Length: 212
Ligand SMILES: Cc1cc2nc3c(=O)[nH]c(=O)nc-3n(C[C@H](O)[C@H](O)[C@H](O)COP(=O)(O)O)c2cc1C
Image (cartoon, rainbow, N blue to C red; front, side):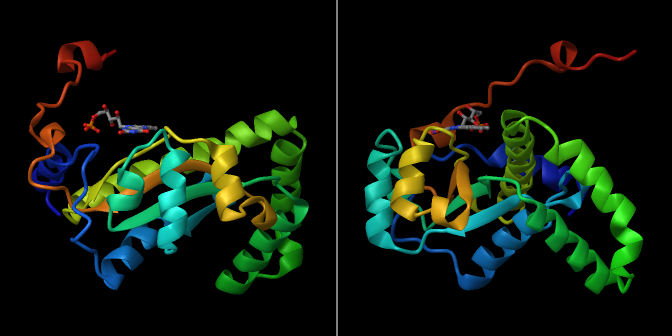
């Protein structure tokens, strides 16, 4: 995609309030969106994040009430819940080392220093700091997902207006050692979503950029 068209795509996208329930994404599109999240950059490459695709229509209905009644949750073609590990465990770090070893054909022993560095800098943090660190990784993935949606002319709505504890309950996330951080319904806007016609409000370039 050329530089001009990516900016046009970012102008085109907006946080969609009304999705057309009859317009569905196809499997390839959904797969590409999940791939965009999977390919997100993460600190140390540790990937303490996961995507939950909610296919169960009843659960999506139930989640509306846990999302301040925002109808996008049930009306959008698909619903992605971007999660992080609930508790960051040593096994997660070890699993990552195994993946590097297999993918790059390097001996596990040669990764010992890298593993220790991650353990010493992340696993020794307070639990709250670890959680905040993992949350940040999810927000990076969100940005990548929104841009990918825009590039594919798929509508989306980034959402933190929901009750994570209720999502955990409805989706059984705790049993999967996951915590919901962000919700992203994706699909197609209805023709009469008034928000689509609103001009974007962004600070002027003068106010936004500092050149030093
Ligand atoms: C982290 C985050 C959380 C958001 N939560 C919600 C939400 O719960 N519901 C909603 O309708 N919009 C939500 N938004 C959308 C913002 O209101 C919107 O991105 C902002 O007003 C800029 O408008 P635009 O994205 O349409 O350009 C959220 C956006 C972000 C980045």
